[in-house]
Image (cartoon, rainbow, N blue to C red; front, side, top):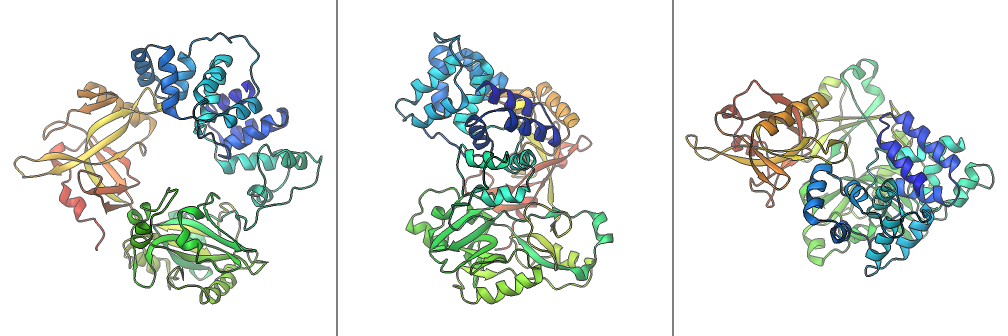
Length: 533
Protein backbone atom coordinates (compact mmCIF):
# COMPACT_ATOMS: atom_id res chain seq x y z
CA UNK A 1 0.00 0.00 0.00
CA UNK A 2 2.83 2.35 0.82
CA UNK A 3 4.32 1.87 -2.65
CA UNK A 4 1.01 2.89 -4.22
CA UNK A 5 0.81 5.87 -1.85
CA UNK A 6 4.30 6.91 -2.89
CA UNK A 7 3.26 6.71 -6.56
CA UNK A 8 0.27 9.00 -5.96
CA UNK A 9 2.41 11.52 -4.07
CA UNK A 10 5.01 11.67 -6.82
CA UNK A 11 2.42 11.88 -9.59
CA UNK A 12 0.80 14.89 -7.93
CA UNK A 13 4.18 16.65 -7.70
CA UNK A 14 5.28 15.80 -11.26
CA UNK A 15 3.85 18.25 -13.81
CA UNK A 16 5.37 16.87 -17.01
CA UNK A 17 3.73 14.13 -19.05
CA UNK A 18 7.01 12.31 -19.66
CA UNK A 19 7.80 12.42 -15.96
CA UNK A 20 4.45 10.82 -15.12
CA UNK A 21 5.06 8.14 -17.77
CA UNK A 22 8.41 7.28 -16.17
CA UNK A 23 6.82 7.01 -12.73
CA UNK A 24 4.08 4.73 -14.03
CA UNK A 25 6.38 2.43 -16.01
CA UNK A 26 8.71 2.15 -12.99
CA UNK A 27 5.73 1.23 -10.79
CA UNK A 28 4.63 -1.50 -13.21
CA UNK A 29 8.19 -2.83 -13.44
CA UNK A 30 8.97 -2.94 -9.71
CA UNK A 31 5.70 -3.77 -7.96
CA UNK A 32 4.65 -7.45 -7.99
CA UNK A 33 1.29 -8.95 -8.90
CA UNK A 34 -1.46 -8.49 -7.87
CA UNK A 35 -0.69 -5.08 -6.31
CA UNK A 36 0.36 -3.45 -9.57
CA UNK A 37 -2.81 -4.73 -11.24
CA UNK A 38 -5.02 -3.16 -8.59
CA UNK A 39 -2.97 0.03 -8.84
CA UNK A 40 -3.61 0.01 -12.59
CA UNK A 41 -7.33 -0.49 -11.97
CA UNK A 42 -7.43 2.45 -9.54
CA UNK A 43 -5.67 4.76 -12.02
CA UNK A 44 -8.02 3.83 -14.87
CA UNK A 45 -11.27 3.92 -12.90
CA UNK A 46 -11.73 0.17 -13.06
CA UNK A 47 -12.39 -0.38 -9.39
CA UNK A 48 -14.98 0.97 -6.98
CA UNK A 49 -16.30 0.48 -3.45
CA UNK A 50 -19.91 1.68 -3.16
CA UNK A 51 -20.01 0.98 0.59
CA UNK A 52 -17.51 3.80 1.30
CA UNK A 53 -18.89 7.32 1.04
CA UNK A 54 -17.37 10.73 1.94
CA UNK A 55 -20.10 11.29 4.55
CA UNK A 56 -19.06 8.07 6.26
CA UNK A 57 -15.45 9.25 6.41
CA UNK A 58 -16.51 12.57 7.94
CA UNK A 59 -18.52 10.75 10.59
CA UNK A 60 -15.58 8.45 11.37
CA UNK A 61 -13.06 11.23 11.84
CA UNK A 62 -15.43 13.38 13.92
CA UNK A 63 -15.85 10.46 16.34
CA UNK A 64 -12.11 10.71 17.00
CA UNK A 65 -11.37 14.42 16.53
CA UNK A 66 -13.15 17.53 17.77
CA UNK A 67 -15.68 18.44 15.02
CA UNK A 68 -14.79 22.13 15.15
CA UNK A 69 -11.09 21.34 14.75
CA UNK A 70 -11.90 19.05 11.82
CA UNK A 71 -14.05 21.75 10.22
CA UNK A 72 -11.28 24.34 10.47
CA UNK A 73 -8.73 21.84 9.19
CA UNK A 74 -10.87 20.81 6.23
CA UNK A 75 -11.52 24.45 5.35
CA UNK A 76 -7.78 25.16 5.41
CA UNK A 77 -6.57 22.03 3.60
CA UNK A 78 -9.44 21.90 1.10
CA UNK A 79 -9.26 18.15 0.39
CA UNK A 80 -11.18 15.58 2.43
CA UNK A 81 -8.74 12.70 1.90
CA UNK A 82 -5.73 14.83 2.81
CA UNK A 83 -7.46 16.30 5.88
CA UNK A 84 -8.54 12.93 7.23
CA UNK A 85 -5.17 11.31 6.57
CA UNK A 86 -3.31 14.05 8.45
CA UNK A 87 -5.66 14.55 11.38
CA UNK A 88 -6.48 10.87 12.01
CA UNK A 89 -5.10 9.89 15.45
CA UNK A 90 -2.71 6.96 15.80
CA UNK A 91 -4.79 3.93 16.77
CA UNK A 92 -4.12 0.86 18.81
CA UNK A 93 -2.88 -0.89 15.69
CA UNK A 94 -0.21 1.75 15.12
CA UNK A 95 3.06 -0.01 14.32
CA UNK A 96 1.41 -3.18 13.03
CA UNK A 97 2.20 -4.59 9.60
CA UNK A 98 1.09 -2.27 6.82
CA UNK A 99 -1.47 -4.05 4.62
CA UNK A 100 -0.68 -4.52 0.94
CA UNK A 101 -2.77 -2.82 -1.73
CA UNK A 102 -4.36 -6.14 -2.69
CA UNK A 103 -5.34 -6.68 0.96
CA UNK A 104 -6.92 -3.24 1.14
CA UNK A 105 -8.87 -3.93 -2.04
CA UNK A 106 -10.03 -7.29 -0.70
CA UNK A 107 -11.19 -5.85 2.63
CA UNK A 108 -13.06 -2.93 1.05
CA UNK A 109 -14.53 -5.13 -1.64
CA UNK A 110 -16.02 -7.52 0.91
CA UNK A 111 -17.34 -4.76 3.19
CA UNK A 112 -21.09 -4.17 3.35
CA UNK A 113 -22.64 -0.81 4.14
CA UNK A 114 -23.09 -1.86 7.77
CA UNK A 115 -19.52 -2.98 8.45
CA UNK A 116 -17.71 -0.58 6.07
CA UNK A 117 -17.09 2.05 8.82
CA UNK A 118 -15.32 -0.49 11.04
CA UNK A 119 -13.30 -1.89 8.13
CA UNK A 120 -12.24 1.58 7.00
CA UNK A 121 -11.37 2.70 10.52
CA UNK A 122 -9.15 -0.34 11.07
CA UNK A 123 -7.34 0.30 7.79
CA UNK A 124 -6.74 3.95 8.68
CA UNK A 125 -5.35 2.86 12.05
CA UNK A 126 -2.85 0.55 10.36
CA UNK A 127 -1.62 2.97 7.68
CA UNK A 128 0.75 5.93 7.70
CA UNK A 129 -0.64 9.36 6.72
CA UNK A 130 0.41 8.86 3.08
CA UNK A 131 -1.09 5.37 3.12
CA UNK A 132 -4.33 6.72 4.58
CA UNK A 133 -4.48 9.33 1.83
CA UNK A 134 -4.06 6.65 -0.84
CA UNK A 135 -6.61 4.34 0.80
CA UNK A 136 -9.24 7.09 0.99
CA UNK A 137 -8.64 8.13 -2.62
CA UNK A 138 -8.85 4.47 -3.65
CA UNK A 139 -12.06 3.93 -1.69
CA UNK A 140 -13.87 7.05 -2.88
CA UNK A 141 -12.68 6.78 -6.48
CA UNK A 142 -11.29 10.29 -6.96
CA UNK A 143 -7.50 10.08 -7.30
CA UNK A 144 -6.98 13.49 -8.93
CA UNK A 145 -3.27 12.97 -9.65
CA UNK A 146 -3.22 14.38 -13.18
CA UNK A 147 -3.19 10.99 -14.88
CA UNK A 148 -5.82 9.96 -17.40
CA UNK A 149 -6.75 6.39 -18.27
CA UNK A 150 -5.22 6.97 -21.70
CA UNK A 151 -1.89 8.08 -20.22
CA UNK A 152 -1.84 5.03 -17.94
CA UNK A 153 -2.41 2.74 -20.93
CA UNK A 154 0.38 4.56 -22.78
CA UNK A 155 2.68 3.78 -19.85
CA UNK A 156 1.61 0.13 -20.04
CA UNK A 157 2.46 0.09 -23.75
CA UNK A 158 5.90 1.57 -23.11
CA UNK A 159 6.47 -0.88 -20.27
CA UNK A 160 5.69 -3.84 -22.54
CA UNK A 161 7.07 -2.26 -25.74
CA UNK A 162 3.78 -2.75 -27.61
CA UNK A 163 1.46 -0.38 -29.46
CA UNK A 164 -1.03 1.38 -27.19
CA UNK A 165 -3.76 0.44 -29.66
CA UNK A 166 -3.24 -3.21 -28.72
CA UNK A 167 -3.87 -2.31 -25.07
CA UNK A 168 -7.01 -0.37 -26.02
CA UNK A 169 -8.36 -3.25 -28.10
CA UNK A 170 -7.95 -5.68 -25.19
CA UNK A 171 -9.06 -3.41 -22.40
CA UNK A 172 -12.77 -4.15 -22.20
CA UNK A 173 -12.23 -7.90 -22.22
CA UNK A 174 -9.79 -8.09 -19.28
CA UNK A 175 -10.31 -7.48 -15.56
CA UNK A 176 -8.27 -6.60 -12.44
CA UNK A 177 -5.71 -7.55 -11.31
CA UNK A 178 -4.67 -8.06 -14.98
CA UNK A 179 -2.25 -10.94 -14.32
CA UNK A 180 -2.54 -12.24 -17.91
CA UNK A 181 -1.95 -8.75 -19.30
CA UNK A 182 1.26 -8.26 -17.31
CA UNK A 183 2.44 -11.76 -18.21
CA UNK A 184 2.07 -10.87 -21.90
CA UNK A 185 3.76 -7.48 -21.49
CA UNK A 186 6.70 -9.15 -19.73
CA UNK A 187 6.92 -11.82 -22.47
CA UNK A 188 6.01 -14.55 -19.97
CA UNK A 189 2.74 -15.55 -21.57
CA UNK A 190 0.54 -15.26 -24.67
CA UNK A 191 -1.42 -12.20 -25.62
CA UNK A 192 -4.78 -12.24 -23.78
CA UNK A 193 -7.88 -12.75 -25.87
CA UNK A 194 -10.59 -10.15 -25.70
CA UNK A 195 -13.39 -12.08 -24.05
CA UNK A 196 -15.87 -9.24 -24.36
CA UNK A 197 -18.72 -9.55 -26.83
CA UNK A 198 -19.60 -6.38 -28.74
CA UNK A 199 -16.36 -4.72 -27.54
CA UNK A 200 -15.59 -1.04 -27.44
CA UNK A 201 -13.20 0.27 -30.11
CA UNK A 202 -10.79 3.09 -29.16
CA UNK A 203 -12.20 6.34 -30.54
CA UNK A 204 -10.51 8.72 -32.94
CA UNK A 205 -10.25 12.30 -31.67
CA UNK A 206 -9.62 15.63 -33.36
CA UNK A 207 -7.11 18.40 -32.75
CA UNK A 208 -8.32 21.97 -32.35
CA UNK A 209 -7.29 23.77 -35.52
CA UNK A 210 -5.03 26.79 -35.22
CA UNK A 211 -4.91 29.81 -37.51
CA UNK A 212 -1.50 28.78 -38.80
CA UNK A 213 -2.72 25.31 -39.84
CA UNK A 214 -4.80 26.53 -42.77
CA UNK A 215 -1.77 27.53 -44.86
CA UNK A 216 -0.61 23.91 -45.06
CA UNK A 217 -4.06 22.36 -45.60
CA UNK A 218 -5.80 21.98 -48.96
CA UNK A 219 -9.60 22.41 -48.71
CA UNK A 220 -10.25 19.76 -51.39
CA UNK A 221 -8.50 17.13 -49.20
CA UNK A 222 -11.05 17.50 -46.38
CA UNK A 223 -14.72 16.87 -45.81
CA UNK A 224 -16.60 19.03 -43.29
CA UNK A 225 -19.37 17.98 -40.90
CA UNK A 226 -21.27 19.90 -38.25
CA UNK A 227 -20.08 19.45 -34.66
CA UNK A 228 -23.18 18.74 -32.59
CA UNK A 229 -23.60 19.57 -28.90
CA UNK A 230 -24.39 16.08 -27.60
CA UNK A 231 -22.21 13.30 -26.19
CA UNK A 232 -19.93 11.06 -28.23
CA UNK A 233 -21.11 7.46 -28.23
CA UNK A 234 -20.34 4.16 -29.90
CA UNK A 235 -23.20 1.75 -30.69
CA UNK A 236 -21.99 -1.84 -31.01
CA UNK A 237 -24.20 -4.85 -31.77
CA UNK A 238 -22.46 -8.14 -32.47
CA UNK A 239 -23.47 -11.76 -31.92
CA UNK A 240 -26.77 -10.78 -30.34
CA UNK A 241 -25.10 -8.48 -27.76
CA UNK A 242 -25.94 -4.77 -27.84
CA UNK A 243 -23.78 -2.19 -26.10
CA UNK A 244 -23.80 1.60 -26.07
CA UNK A 245 -20.48 3.09 -24.95
CA UNK A 246 -19.36 6.58 -23.99
CA UNK A 247 -16.22 7.98 -25.62
CA UNK A 248 -14.18 6.68 -22.67
CA UNK A 249 -15.56 3.15 -23.04
CA UNK A 250 -18.11 3.18 -20.20
CA UNK A 251 -21.15 0.99 -20.87
CA UNK A 252 -24.16 3.35 -20.79
CA UNK A 253 -26.66 0.97 -22.42
CA UNK A 254 -28.83 0.83 -19.29
CA UNK A 255 -29.42 4.58 -19.32
CA UNK A 256 -30.66 4.56 -22.93
CA UNK A 257 -32.79 1.41 -23.39
CA UNK A 258 -34.85 3.06 -26.15
CA UNK A 259 -31.77 3.36 -28.37
CA UNK A 260 -30.34 -0.04 -27.38
CA UNK A 261 -33.65 -1.72 -28.29
CA UNK A 262 -33.37 -0.28 -31.81
CA UNK A 263 -29.90 -1.72 -32.45
CA UNK A 264 -31.00 -4.63 -34.65
CA UNK A 265 -27.80 -4.84 -36.67
CA UNK A 266 -24.32 -6.31 -36.79
CA UNK A 267 -22.01 -3.30 -36.73
CA UNK A 268 -20.10 -0.76 -34.64
CA UNK A 269 -21.18 2.84 -35.23
CA UNK A 270 -19.55 6.07 -34.05
CA UNK A 271 -21.60 9.20 -33.58
CA UNK A 272 -23.33 11.75 -31.35
CA UNK A 273 -26.15 11.04 -28.91
CA UNK A 274 -28.87 13.69 -29.09
CA UNK A 275 -32.41 14.19 -27.79
CA UNK A 276 -35.42 14.46 -30.09
CA UNK A 277 -36.37 13.05 -33.46
CA UNK A 278 -33.95 13.58 -36.36
CA UNK A 279 -36.88 13.91 -38.77
CA UNK A 280 -38.46 16.72 -36.78
CA UNK A 281 -36.66 18.52 -33.94
CA UNK A 282 -33.32 18.11 -32.17
CA UNK A 283 -33.27 19.03 -28.51
CA UNK A 284 -30.63 20.98 -26.60
CA UNK A 285 -27.86 19.65 -24.40
CA UNK A 286 -29.99 20.69 -21.43
CA UNK A 287 -32.64 18.26 -22.68
CA UNK A 288 -30.02 15.54 -23.00
CA UNK A 289 -28.88 16.16 -19.43
CA UNK A 290 -32.28 14.95 -18.26
CA UNK A 291 -31.23 11.48 -19.44
CA UNK A 292 -27.58 11.43 -18.38
CA UNK A 293 -26.19 9.59 -15.33
CA UNK A 294 -29.44 7.76 -14.56
CA UNK A 295 -29.55 4.18 -13.35
CA UNK A 296 -33.22 3.80 -14.25
CA UNK A 297 -35.33 5.64 -16.81
CA UNK A 298 -39.06 6.18 -16.34
CA UNK A 299 -41.61 5.83 -19.11
CA UNK A 300 -42.30 9.55 -18.80
CA UNK A 301 -38.63 10.31 -19.39
CA UNK A 302 -38.53 7.98 -22.40
CA UNK A 303 -41.59 9.72 -23.83
CA UNK A 304 -40.55 13.32 -23.17
CA UNK A 305 -36.83 12.97 -23.95
CA UNK A 306 -36.34 10.27 -26.60
CA UNK A 307 -32.78 9.91 -27.86
CA UNK A 308 -31.28 9.16 -31.25
CA UNK A 309 -27.80 8.75 -32.68
CA UNK A 310 -26.42 11.03 -35.35
CA UNK A 311 -23.87 8.75 -37.00
CA UNK A 312 -20.65 9.87 -38.64
CA UNK A 313 -18.55 6.73 -38.92
CA UNK A 314 -18.72 2.95 -39.15
CA UNK A 315 -15.96 0.97 -37.42
CA UNK A 316 -17.15 -2.56 -38.16
CA UNK A 317 -19.85 -3.91 -40.45
CA UNK A 318 -21.14 -7.49 -40.51
CA UNK A 319 -17.91 -8.89 -39.11
CA UNK A 320 -15.61 -6.72 -41.23
CA UNK A 321 -13.22 -4.23 -39.62
CA UNK A 322 -13.76 -1.06 -41.66
CA UNK A 323 -11.38 1.22 -39.74
CA UNK A 324 -8.45 0.77 -42.20
CA UNK A 325 -10.63 2.06 -45.06
CA UNK A 326 -10.40 5.73 -46.14
CA UNK A 327 -12.93 8.10 -44.62
CA UNK A 328 -14.70 8.63 -47.96
CA UNK A 329 -15.24 4.88 -48.41
CA UNK A 330 -16.42 4.42 -44.82
CA UNK A 331 -18.81 7.29 -45.32
CA UNK A 332 -20.39 5.63 -48.36
CA UNK A 333 -20.77 2.33 -46.48
CA UNK A 334 -22.37 4.18 -43.57
CA UNK A 335 -24.79 6.04 -45.84
CA UNK A 336 -26.01 2.81 -47.43
CA UNK A 337 -26.19 0.96 -44.11
CA UNK A 338 -28.27 3.63 -42.36
CA UNK A 339 -31.07 3.23 -44.90
CA UNK A 340 -31.80 -0.13 -43.21
CA UNK A 341 -32.10 1.31 -39.67
CA UNK A 342 -35.05 3.05 -37.93
CA UNK A 343 -35.13 6.66 -39.11
CA UNK A 344 -36.27 7.91 -35.70
CA UNK A 345 -33.21 6.44 -33.95
CA UNK A 346 -30.33 6.70 -36.44
CA UNK A 347 -29.47 9.30 -39.02
CA UNK A 348 -26.41 10.45 -40.96
CA UNK A 349 -24.43 13.51 -39.91
CA UNK A 350 -24.67 15.82 -42.95
CA UNK A 351 -21.58 17.10 -44.71
CA UNK A 352 -21.06 20.78 -45.48
CA UNK A 353 -20.22 21.69 -49.09
CA UNK A 354 -17.39 24.25 -49.38
CA UNK A 355 -14.54 25.19 -51.68
CA UNK A 356 -12.49 27.62 -49.61
CA UNK A 357 -11.69 28.03 -45.93
CA UNK A 358 -13.34 31.46 -46.02
CA UNK A 359 -16.58 29.96 -47.28
CA UNK A 360 -16.51 27.30 -44.55
CA UNK A 361 -15.73 29.94 -41.91
CA UNK A 362 -18.85 31.89 -42.90
CA UNK A 363 -20.96 28.76 -42.51
CA UNK A 364 -19.26 27.94 -39.20
CA UNK A 365 -20.20 31.34 -37.82
CA UNK A 366 -23.81 31.01 -39.01
CA UNK A 367 -24.86 27.39 -38.40
CA UNK A 368 -28.39 26.25 -39.30
CA UNK A 369 -29.14 24.96 -35.78
CA UNK A 370 -28.50 26.50 -32.32
CA UNK A 371 -26.99 23.32 -30.84
CA UNK A 372 -24.18 23.20 -33.40
CA UNK A 373 -20.81 23.92 -31.74
CA UNK A 374 -18.76 24.34 -34.92
CA UNK A 375 -17.44 22.10 -37.68
CA UNK A 376 -15.31 18.98 -37.96
CA UNK A 377 -12.69 18.62 -40.71
CA UNK A 378 -11.87 15.06 -41.78
CA UNK A 379 -9.26 14.15 -44.34
CA UNK A 380 -10.97 12.11 -47.05
CA UNK A 381 -8.21 9.51 -47.34
CA UNK A 382 -7.67 9.01 -43.59
CA UNK A 383 -8.25 5.66 -41.87
CA UNK A 384 -9.92 5.56 -38.47
CA UNK A 385 -7.01 5.82 -36.04
CA UNK A 386 -7.32 5.57 -32.23
CA UNK A 387 -6.20 8.48 -30.11
CA UNK A 388 -5.59 12.01 -31.37
CA UNK A 389 -3.24 11.86 -34.38
CA UNK A 390 -2.31 15.29 -35.76
CA UNK A 391 -3.55 15.94 -39.28
CA UNK A 392 -6.45 13.61 -40.19
CA UNK A 393 -9.19 15.26 -38.08
CA UNK A 394 -9.57 18.83 -36.87
CA UNK A 395 -12.29 20.56 -34.86
CA UNK A 396 -13.09 24.19 -35.61
CA UNK A 397 -15.44 25.40 -32.91
CA UNK A 398 -17.53 28.53 -32.99
CA UNK A 399 -15.96 31.57 -31.38
CA UNK A 400 -16.97 31.73 -27.71
CA UNK A 401 -19.48 34.24 -26.39
CA UNK A 402 -18.19 36.78 -23.90
CA UNK A 403 -19.79 38.91 -21.23
CA UNK A 404 -18.44 41.41 -18.70
CA UNK A 405 -19.62 40.32 -15.24
CA UNK A 406 -18.90 41.43 -11.68
CA UNK A 407 -17.22 39.15 -9.13
CA UNK A 408 -19.71 38.44 -6.30
CA UNK A 409 -18.48 35.41 -4.31
CA UNK A 410 -15.29 33.38 -4.02
CA UNK A 411 -14.47 30.00 -2.53
CA UNK A 412 -11.21 28.20 -1.94
CA UNK A 413 -10.18 25.52 -4.38
CA UNK A 414 -9.04 21.98 -3.66
CA UNK A 415 -5.69 20.22 -3.82
CA UNK A 416 -2.92 22.56 -4.92
CA UNK A 417 -5.39 25.47 -4.93
CA UNK A 418 -6.60 24.95 -1.39
CA UNK A 419 -4.71 28.05 -0.20
CA UNK A 420 -6.29 30.30 -2.86
CA UNK A 421 -9.76 31.63 -3.48
CA UNK A 422 -10.04 30.23 -6.99
CA UNK A 423 -13.76 29.42 -7.54
CA UNK A 424 -15.68 32.52 -8.54
CA UNK A 425 -19.37 33.34 -8.80
CA UNK A 426 -20.12 36.35 -10.99
CA UNK A 427 -23.20 38.33 -11.92
CA UNK A 428 -24.63 40.95 -14.25
CA UNK A 429 -26.95 43.86 -13.60
CA UNK A 430 -30.71 43.41 -13.56
CA UNK A 431 -33.71 45.53 -12.62
CA UNK A 432 -34.34 49.27 -13.07
CA UNK A 433 -31.54 51.39 -14.50
CA UNK A 434 -31.61 53.73 -11.50
CA UNK A 435 -31.52 50.92 -8.90
CA UNK A 436 -29.99 47.83 -10.52
CA UNK A 437 -28.99 44.72 -8.55
CA UNK A 438 -26.40 42.06 -9.35
CA UNK A 439 -27.91 38.76 -10.44
CA UNK A 440 -25.62 35.67 -10.30
CA UNK A 441 -25.33 34.07 -13.74
CA UNK A 442 -22.45 31.63 -13.49
CA UNK A 443 -19.44 30.15 -11.74
CA UNK A 444 -15.93 29.53 -13.10
CA UNK A 445 -12.68 28.20 -11.71
CA UNK A 446 -10.27 28.26 -14.65
CA UNK A 447 -9.11 30.37 -17.58
CA UNK A 448 -6.73 32.62 -15.60
CA UNK A 449 -2.98 32.35 -15.18
CA UNK A 450 -1.21 31.58 -11.89
CA UNK A 451 -0.22 35.23 -11.59
CA UNK A 452 -3.81 36.36 -12.17
CA UNK A 453 -4.99 33.84 -9.56
CA UNK A 454 -2.74 35.50 -6.98
CA UNK A 455 -4.11 38.93 -7.94
CA UNK A 456 -7.75 37.81 -7.62
CA UNK A 457 -7.03 35.99 -4.36
CA UNK A 458 -5.54 39.14 -2.85
CA UNK A 459 -8.49 41.19 -4.10
CA UNK A 460 -10.95 38.76 -2.49
CA UNK A 461 -9.16 38.85 0.88
CA UNK A 462 -8.91 42.65 0.84
CA UNK A 463 -12.55 43.19 -0.16
CA UNK A 464 -14.49 40.53 1.77
CA UNK A 465 -17.70 41.96 3.23
CA UNK A 466 -19.35 38.77 4.54
CA UNK A 467 -18.69 35.06 4.99
CA UNK A 468 -20.96 32.06 4.46
CA UNK A 469 -18.95 29.08 5.69
CA UNK A 470 -16.13 28.60 3.16
CA UNK A 471 -17.60 31.23 0.80
CA UNK A 472 -16.65 34.90 0.91
CA UNK A 473 -18.94 37.62 -0.38
CA UNK A 474 -16.90 40.28 -2.17
CA UNK A 475 -17.68 43.97 -2.20
CA UNK A 476 -19.59 44.63 -5.41
CA UNK A 477 -21.74 47.67 -6.17
CA UNK A 478 -22.07 50.35 -8.82
CA UNK A 479 -18.85 52.06 -7.71
CA UNK A 480 -16.63 49.25 -6.42
CA UNK A 481 -15.81 45.75 -7.61
CA UNK A 482 -13.83 43.61 -10.01
CA UNK A 483 -15.13 43.07 -13.54
CA UNK A 484 -14.32 39.73 -15.17
CA UNK A 485 -14.57 39.04 -18.88
CA UNK A 486 -16.21 35.61 -18.98
CA UNK A 487 -16.10 33.39 -22.07
CA UNK A 488 -18.59 30.56 -22.56
CA UNK A 489 -19.78 28.20 -25.30
CA UNK A 490 -23.47 28.98 -25.15
CA UNK A 491 -26.54 29.59 -23.01
CA UNK A 492 -29.59 27.54 -22.12
CA UNK A 493 -32.73 28.32 -20.20
CA UNK A 494 -32.73 26.77 -16.75
CA UNK A 495 -35.28 26.48 -13.95
CA UNK A 496 -32.52 25.57 -11.46
CA UNK A 497 -30.80 28.97 -11.62
CA UNK A 498 -32.11 32.22 -10.20
CA UNK A 499 -31.29 34.05 -13.41
CA UNK A 500 -33.14 31.47 -15.53
CA UNK A 501 -29.97 30.98 -17.56
CA UNK A 502 -27.26 28.30 -17.51
CA UNK A 503 -23.84 28.83 -19.11
CA UNK A 504 -21.96 26.12 -21.00
CA UNK A 505 -18.27 25.83 -20.01
CA UNK A 506 -17.75 29.32 -18.53
CA UNK A 507 -14.15 30.42 -17.90
CA UNK A 508 -12.40 33.66 -16.98
CA UNK A 509 -10.82 35.02 -20.14
CA UNK A 510 -9.62 38.41 -18.88
CA UNK A 511 -9.47 40.58 -15.76
CA UNK A 512 -11.00 43.97 -16.50
CA UNK A 513 -9.19 46.11 -13.93
CA UNK A 514 -9.77 48.99 -16.34
CA UNK A 515 -13.55 48.74 -16.39
CA UNK A 516 -15.83 50.26 -13.72
CA UNK A 517 -18.50 47.94 -12.36
CA UNK A 518 -21.42 50.08 -13.52
CA UNK A 519 -20.33 49.38 -17.11
CA UNK A 520 -20.66 45.60 -16.71
CA UNK A 521 -23.29 43.91 -18.84
CA UNK A 522 -26.98 43.54 -18.02
CA UNK A 523 -29.10 40.41 -17.99
CA UNK A 524 -30.75 41.54 -21.22
CA UNK A 525 -27.39 41.09 -22.97
CA UNK A 526 -27.35 37.42 -22.01
CA UNK A 527 -31.01 36.88 -22.83
CA UNK A 528 -30.31 38.11 -26.36
CA UNK A 529 -27.69 35.34 -26.71
CA UNK A 530 -30.15 32.54 -25.91
CA UNK A 531 -30.76 30.17 -28.82
CA UNK A 532 -33.86 30.82 -30.88
CA UNK A 533 -36.78 28.55 -30.04
